Each structure stands twice: as structure tokens, then as C-alpha cells.
Image 1 (spheres, one colour):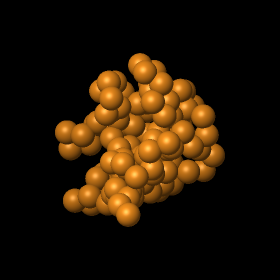
Image 2: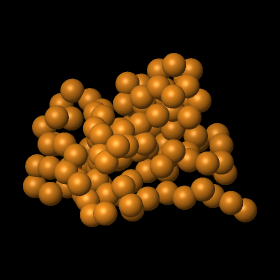
Image 3: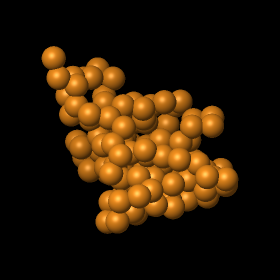
Length: 110
């Protein structure tokens, strides 16, 4: 699958966003000029991560306070576990495109 149009950059004015791409809900987060795409579900409570609190490169789930790194999908205190899937993003002009087949993170194993 190639990258799919997700959202216009202007839509980030109101904070993190959620879009559905091929049946997958994706949370989109902006940090300065970078856009990050994660599967939009907290593995603990299942609530949408885009509704949490974003602080730079981290988002904290609104339900139980679990924090995730937007760059890796890992919980900072458990970086050897299973991360939330993160996906490749590309900005084309004023549009954000996401490729669900290009994961940007993988579980870390010793």
C-alpha cells in the first residue's frame, strides 16, 4: 500500500487529530515541523491517544496516565516492551500522508 492522504496541516491548529485509514484509527501529532502517526489506542484502556495530553514528543493517555513517546511508540519507562505501532508520515505541500505499511518502530529485544 502506498501512502494515503490523512489531513491538511492547517487542521493541527486545534491540536492532535485522529483519522481513519483503511480501517485503522491513526492519531496524528505535530511537534514543530514534524508529524507523527501512531495507532490511536492506548493498550491499557483502549482510549484514543489523541485525546490525551501532548507534551513535546510524549502523549499521556487521559484515562490512566500512561505516557508514550511519539517517536518510538514505547512507554519511556518500558523501552524493551511492545510499542504502539508508529507509521511513516510525509508532508506534501500542505497535506500529511501516512503509509501504514511502513512502520517506523519495532519492538526492541536484547
